[in-house]
Image (cartoon, rainbow, N blue to C red; front, side):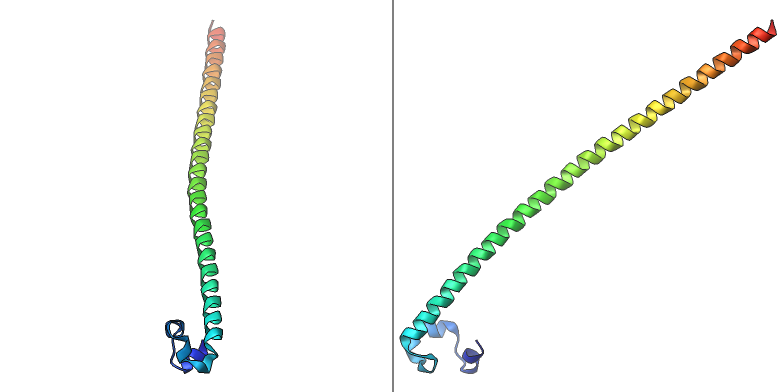
Length: 111
């Protein structure tokens, strides 16, 4: 590439008129080189397409995982709230039971 820039030639010029730039080799050599560059470009395009697909799949997976995590967090929060509710109800029943016992004892001592 540096050589091309030094000669003030772009690849399109070489591709269109390979015989005009003999300083880069024969017309056949230039054509083979250009075909090699085209093959490399196609390979890079295929790599980029594969990477783009992987990124899209990764983004979908990430979004699905975020959704799943939100569902799990909601389930955990619901369970914790239910457990606290049950603990509160149990404590309330225990308190009422103790109150009832104390009232019974108080009534028994009163008579």
